[in-house]
Image (cartoon, rainbow, N blue to C red; front, side):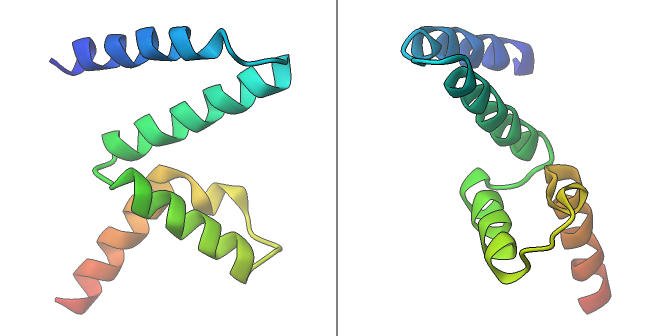
Length: 85
């Protein structure tokens, strides 16, 4: 089922990417879709993940990009959850 879902996303992406007017626009779309799908695979809500990332970028302009990957955010949330229980 998971594979079929990813194939559907790729088909949808292929259809939408034809409207990327430049290589940099297509690259930005690919990065965005990759982040969203990785957030889902890590059990994160994509909206909340992106909100967390954007809030952190505003709060800390010297952020480390490695700390804002879906894997890092999911790990931090697990650690925070374990610390409060």
